[in-house]
Amino acid sequence: AQTVTQSQPEMSVQEAETVTLSCTYDTSENNYYLFWYKQPPSRQMILVIRQEAYKQQNATENRFSVNFQKAAKSFSLKISDSQLGDTAMYFCAYSNGNTGKLIFGQGTTLQVKP
Amino acid sequence: DTGVSQNPRHKITKRGQNVTFRCDPISEHNRLYWYRQTLGQGPEFLTYFQNEAQLEKSRLLSDRFSAERPKGSFSTLEIQRTEQGDSAMYLCASSLVRGEKLFFGSGTQLSVL
Image: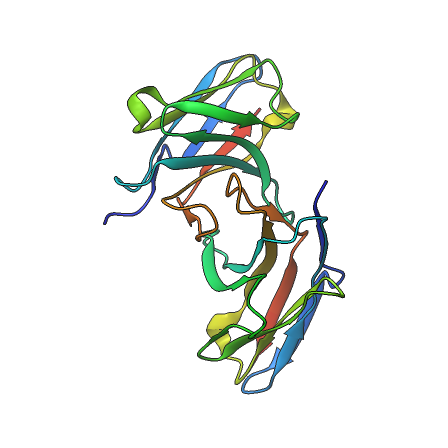
């Protein structure tokens, strides 16, 4: 069975600084997708970034980028120029692309301090 | 595109009562998912529909839980004889193509007293 592990329950960063959230996963599949979702206090799940496993190039969305290490089964999220609005819980998620269902990690609570 | 809609937003019920939640996915999305999330934890998969067919059910979905998606449009999740352990946020999500992102609704927060 596939699993997703986020080993950092809580993190904090100063506004305008850079922070990296860690995620590891376990799968025997070769084709799959990885996601980072953000859940602010409103509890609305918002997609931050998506990575296709067959693509070697790391995905980037504005201030958000990933470091995808397929052999190590690692998928970290880097947030540059952190903003107060980035304060939220962040979830790493895996999809095998078959059913499309997501398997989520336990989450990392990120607080951006002014 | 009005997004994924879930009703009600909040539900308070007494232990032993039945409750039903509704999810309206984005209109052209044929895939629909239900998740359960307790505070401070990641969402846990419950079940998945492709059109009107329920293709996968988690072991978390006990006999007291049932989900339907008649005509492949909206979906309902019913919990019979609710227990305090059922208290959670129930999230619905939809997608068009496998591997693409899931669009989530705002969830239904259930409190069982």
